[in-house]
Length: 192
Length: 138
Image (cartoon, rainbow over all chains, first blue to last red; front, side):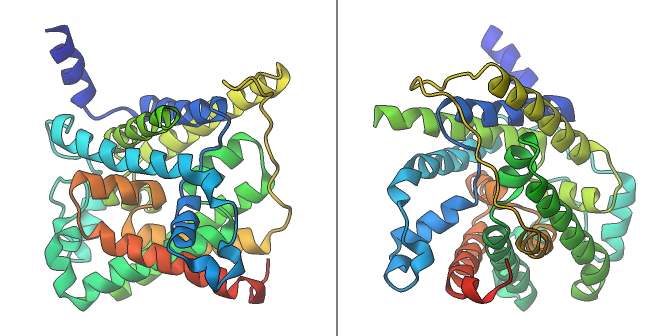
């Protein structure tokens, strides 16, 4: 009974301060394990495991020291599965009305889910637009995070927590890029 | 293998936290880049505020990790070109896919198979950086 009550409680969408605290806790746990919190370096490790080091020196590094991070990454996939199967919120996502309107103007309908099925359903793979958003978007994330030396976890959480000016510059870059995409490029991409 | 289990468990917790925080939501990222909700700013801001405090305490009291080694933090190499340029490129992708590297994998677990294409793109992007990095300003 108590367990059910706890699960019911966890199932509600979490307020930002609970989530923020929990994310900081993950960083702290990894620090006490003698590691550092950074997800995007796994992409480099996977490239090395696939043999990229044979041709490109950047991928010749002690990737075995990163195995712990791959286990962490496998855990995140499992965590997503657990959350969506047994801990999903009872109601629709509480998106701001202004965002719903803005997206509607771009012909993207708010469906109350995590991501619009219009763009992230498997049917997206049947359209050129779907491939652009998913493939090129992923490419930019992978290229940019390695060029910047980290992503949201490595720079925005770990780096800023350690008061690193380079991380602040990177995070400013994340936002400049995000604003350009949202306000200048979205109207071109989603013109219909 | 036993030693590895704690990383898997931490990852599972992280995946659940990212899901329940809605930081994995494409909609929430759009809301953030349109400045239409405090949610993501409060989330990142509170995580960083607590992170700064704990990092300071760890340094101040020279705390040790579970292996008994004093915890050290490495500084990021100085510069701005790579951070700004790389950051902007990353931001373009973040707003397009609505997901940064952690959430890409969380969403795969949530049942979005199209994330495999995003992961393939991200791996290709990482590989491309490795190939041309010496020709880029850092």
